[in-house]
Amino acid sequence: MSDRASSDRVNQLLKSLEGKLDSAAILLGDAISEGYAADATAKGAMPLAVLRPRNTQDVSVILAAANAVGQPIVVQGGRTGLSGASRPEAGEVSLSLERLNGVDAIDKAAQTIIAGAGTPMQIIQQAADHENLYFGVDIGARGTATVGGNIGTNAGGIRVLRYGMYRAQVMGVEAVLADGTIISSLKGLPKDNSGYNLSPLFIGTEGTIGVVTRACLKLHPKPKIERNAFVALPSLAAVQELLARLRVELSGLLSAFELLFPNIYEKTVNYMGIRPPVETGAGMYAMIEIQGQSPDQDNERFEAALAQAIEDGLATDVVLSNSMRESQALWAIRDGINDFLFSNGVLIGFDISVPLGRMQEFLDTVKVPIDAIDPENQTYIFGHMGDGNLHYCMFTDHYEAIAEVIFSGIQKVGGGVSAEHGIGTDKKHYLKYARSEAEIATMRRMKTAFDPNYILNRGRVFEAPASFGGALEQH
Image 1 (cartoon, rainbow, N blue to C red):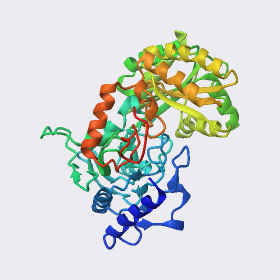
Image 2 (cartoon, rainbow, N blue to C red):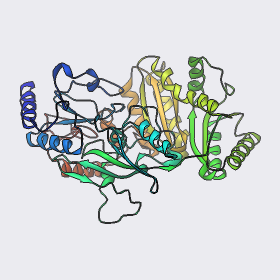
Image 3 (cartoon, helix red, strand yellow):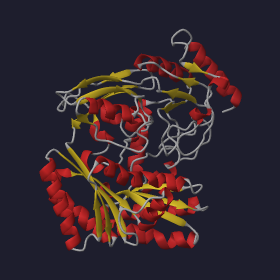
């Protein structure tokens, strides 16, 4: 569509919104900062306008007006995404939920919290902690990533092993459909089979079928003990065996099991300028955490399990935290990986989900063809071992060829092309490696049913039909 046509359509939208929003709700021209054009990985097009609703009713008014004129909308939260779901495309208007920020209520008896879609994760964590409760999801972008974005991408993080994905934390949502219809289900009932449960439809669908404005989230009892260990192991097979053993021996205590390949461990501690907590030169490394309610007993079980692992040759070196400061120092290594990687230039990363039993098979399958494509590639692998989520990161100039190798390898072992960061615009061409034609067709039917004019996050997850926005590639 021409620039003139886009401009005319935006003008129609803004005219229809006159007198319906407050003065801070509309940003135009120089008032739009470059931050609205980017996510955490790249810069997109500058949005033609930024709309900043105060509440659910404002969102309803905006979407009804946009739908009436066919104006495409990109939905934005903290803009920390890694797949392009919130990165503007040409001709789009940004719907920023940053003003839908705050905690409405905590129900201590039900252990739930209601919060606006623009509320950062860290605010949820702090509010829960204030009531001696605990929120089960944690990610590195906790200070910026928001409730709405986390729901839209079904965020994961370091404690999926214990608490599940973000989906498991959502007790209900309030959302606005493309035509402005408001759907609200914030009761927080753990058992409610009163007809269709609509809330899950908005989880992991990346803002393509509706805009979440508020959510009722599940909280948990605050742990009385949180302790971790950094472990050196001889091989990936040993890592897998130790994880399987700890799932049984530590039962509900195990809250995180992070995997670090040797080169990323050694280079990260060197970059941080710290002394390695465990020996370098091992075959593999793991960061293991427990959370429990019985400090003495839980400590004893954890120490005994790790001592047995050393005795059985599953681990070659272990360091245990003995204070919150030591625990934070160990986690700082895991958190410092991204700092090291991004300090080395343009990075490509594959956020993939691999069946635990076929992880070595996948690694063996992709290594030879990747080395053939780029013998000089630098590869760094780490991730959430407890749920099979690998971050396969590389420095290379051969993205497209290597992406085909990675994703065809994922298809071979029955994995997922996106474990926790969504599809967005960046991975939609690779969705076919993880979903069948019938599944993708069903997704399209859902999209068309909820958003027949394709105004919401058009071109995310899969391409829009050619009748919307020009000749787009079909899949």
